[in-house]
Image 1 (cartoon, helix red, strand yellow):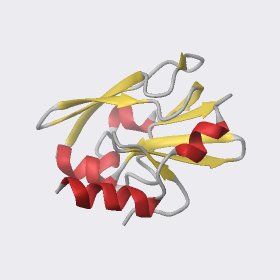
Image 2 (cartoon, helix red, strand yellow; image 1 turned 135 degrees about the vertical axis):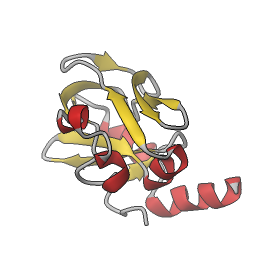
Image 3 (spheres, helix red, strand yellow; image 1 turned 45 degrees about the vertical axis):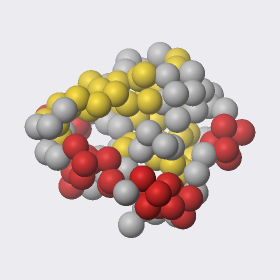
Length: 127
């Protein structure tokens, strides 16, 4: 189930705004499709990315997938726990398996992303 307190992209990232930062991760659908995550390459804190910009890589036993920034923003933090425990993405993609946090992000772009229901409908159309 996709939490309704965040927005979603067609490329299967989620974003949740809290305390002036935007937390970003990949969806349960994405982690399940990838299989066991084995490695995560995250951007440097302070780097800026445009909406849909390639900002990292998530590797699994099946493939390597690019991570796309859901909105324009600057990296405020990355989940250092994933360096030694990338499986957190499989175990808890919406909480402990978050990937990065953005600051100075474009709030209007967040509003344009899909709700949980819209994201679910997009998955149903694809299958």
